[in-house]
Length: 325
Image (cartoon, rainbow, N blue to C red; front, side):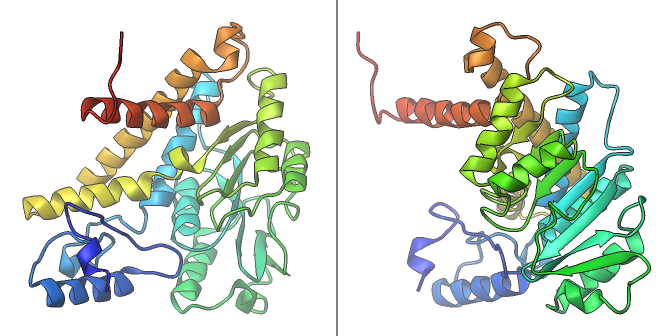
């Protein structure tokens, strides 16, 4: 039993791949039955059990908000998602809602995928909202994308056993949103050849270490406007964890937050995360020390260092270690 190890002041788990609000609700019910306490022991709960609005959307929406800051930084505010071609892997919550928000902002989503294959758009207008809704419904029924092969021939191409990266033509933004190590070194080189300029992990460790090295080397060599810019999952996909925190706060207050309030706070926390990684990279990373103002700061280094600093400062504050003269 997990109940002795979780709780509002101990450890608060959340759902992930294959674990929806239904399963989380079952776990919450088992915890309540065993402890006789109604409290936030887990997040991602159904709304009827104190869950929060926008939890399914949070990681995908947050990812798009984060990448939006990347685009505005590179373009000095002259560009946004409008007209950008976005390749997305996965077709679960993260991919679905990243695609939905990207389309809402005027982008063309050119791919989605699952464990058995990929769908790409037939036309340059990308995957349409009607097709995306059909994919969302398909996934709610726990079916595979290849089940669309006969019914969507006019708008979607279906490929079995393939990831999306080498099945698309021109790409501005790549968002791995499926699982770990899904974007390889050869995929990275392929995306660079296609003109990709932004890569952000919607999944945890979506890129292999060799793929990340390809992106970071390209960023270091090329100037702003021509370099690819990579954002690690620990920063780009924190929207889900952030909204879990909001759910904890909502449960402690014994109130329900509105969609507008959750979205506003999610936008703010993604902006803060981007700025934190950016400023830290500018302060500590090699490009800043060498005064290479025409190079993009490393969001990978900045996010890693910012996370380390936050933990180190907390350890110092509680006396886990002391500074000496």
